Length: 496
Image 1 (cartoon, rainbow, N blue to C red):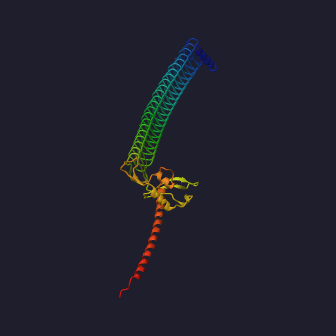
Image 2: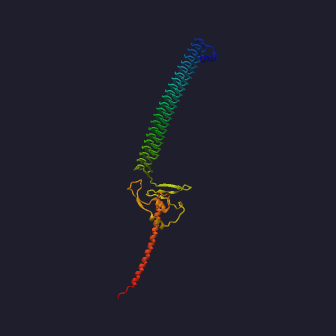
Image 3: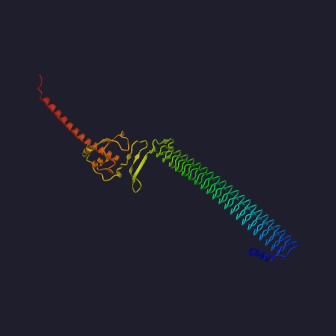
């Protein structure tokens, strides 16, 4: 009983500083005490009323310091002042205010109006019409707030409810944390109804499953285990561990699917991703649409990095640009900005529409100028190798006739690639024979078109030289024949 005696001693010493008691005060309890005021009653043992009007301390060690019509009927309970307050729980306290009630052990209402702390060790800091109705529940202040379960907390605001164990509502208006360990930081009309669910703020957001989170924004929903909506407007994460970071009207409905942002995007495949943009869909498992608008990656592991109106529907397919369609497994389709659809035609096919031409650059100089590579001109049908004299060095003359002789000795046959059907025939030498004969090229397994063209041109020159020599010989023979014909005509007798 040390604690009640300390309270009584403090109240008694405080009362000595006040004026002498008025009339009509009553103290009927053993060693009870009324110091001042009017119509006050101290009826409990060691109870105390210091001053005020119509106050009642009716239980052992109970105290009313001042105020009007306050009632203390809990053991060692205290009302500090105010009006129409009731401290009904043992060791409970009402600091002041009006119409406040503490009705269970060690409850506290610091002040305000019409607040109630009815659970053991419950606390209402102030405000109006707040209720802390279960053990260790706390309402810091505000209006119309309810902390209704064990260890529930409402920091403030208005009409907020923390009705699950260990739930928290920081503030705001009409927010609800209704399942164990759920949290609403603030905002308006938000609900955290899953265990360990969190709504940081915003308006009309819902985190309705275990571990779900909505950071803020408006009308967002995280409705399955460990789902997350970072913010934005009307976004939905509906499958386990799915995420929408922001934007508006986005949906992550696949398991661990992600939408980074943008507008009206959907990641519906398992582990699918839409980075942003508008109207994009990642519907295949592990599919990705990085951005752009109205793109669709519906094949497993398919990808659209961006652009518009592209579709990657084959497994591990890739479509980019405008109106590209990768319809087959493993197909890669790149489309330029022409407003026409271009589609793959076979699995594992590379298709590119580039009506402005194509360039492959394989080397540059110190200023970044291309020094090697090939191009396909707009509207063209053949690759052009870079052949600028300024890109070449170490020139050496070619003996065209000797080269022609070597070419004549190289086996030229028809054959098929092992990777193709036997019916698909090709003609030419092997790279090993070509390298052995002419000593050009990067290795012994490939013949570059520039070297094949060079050998052909040199051989043509050799043939031309030989033809020139033959033509000269023929001309000389013709002259000789003409001379002989003239001599024979001179030797023939003249007719009379």
